[in-house]
Image (tube, rainbow, N blue to C red):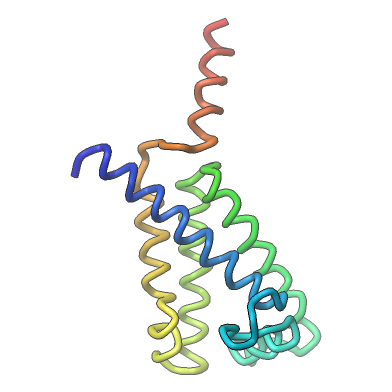
Length: 151
């Protein structure tokens, strides 16, 4: 695979993972129409979160849902702009793997397969292994750092 193909694949993975995270967040906040929504609102999302984590006390579920939502937004932004891409891709893979395993152990294998959570996990871990920079904030930061060191 040549460098140009690698760059295109990296951009595609960054955008695909970011938009998937943001779409899920928009869904739980009620921004998608009911006909295409998985949860449709925060309450339904928290009910599903409790389904995936039945061992958690009810009082902790909103906190866990909030933390997952914040992480998804933060990871999406970092991946989209290319800030510490390899790190946030790896962290995204870990988060997605947690989702996939929770879904598998509580609802069965069909849900994570239908929602391509294992595929997204593999995409995130694959992205973490592509080190070439292209349209990334990291490239700008690296150039600025080397300019400062040269001065």
